[in-house]
Length: 329
Image (cartoon, rainbow, N blue to C red; front, top):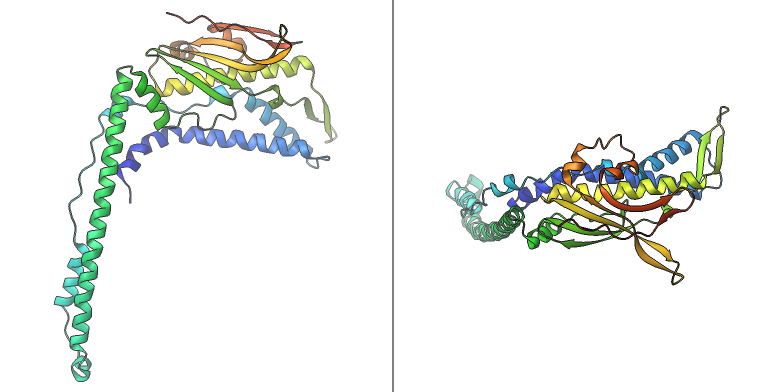
């Protein structure tokens, strides 16, 4: 049975369907690549190169995927569920069977008429109890649907009014970032009425393969160590791609003026000699700027110049810790 709750949530489900498919494809690419790494010998050189290329492309293009934008106006216009009327279909059917019962010749001959009538009467009682159970179940479902509709209406009204609690509830309701493996390991969000401040604990550079695969002219597999500069640039693209994706996902749900995303990583503090969780990229992303970009063709690292950001990076050393970029007041 399709419930109102199911219909209400189906809007969010439709919004996220494309994203789930893309996440599935990303996981499959990562899975094939990791399985490939475990093999001592690779039989299919062409497939191995294809898996490697797909994985490398995936880790630097996560910004291309995003769910559709939530239409809060559409949600506000959703009608409340209708209270179900009580139905007695089973009892009605059982009574009709009794009313239409006509003893056969053998019923009369063997005296089984009364026995069959008693059986039909008992079926009416059973049917009546089933109707009561079904009516109660429909009413309980209605109560749940009404509660869910009211909750989503409150969220929609709050989001339209820029209420922080509504922002939190919207992210929780639609389970935003339930799977962030391709972006990082953890998100910490500070909510404000016009913007969000997001700390993204990014994936370590272990997500980047340290080798390259090629297929030779003779069809054999060529494997060589990846140059340090290329390795670092791939990791830079992955980080920059991830912060754009985080912003796009949030903008799809919340009408904010901007988002500050701080990519957090374990960086050596030269003063203490210890690894510390520090920003390696801090960026302010307004939605109007993202919308102007051709996300299918941008280089994630080069695209940072379109935004106010702090980032220290070199091909030889990789990322260095930076200060969080100052918030716009």
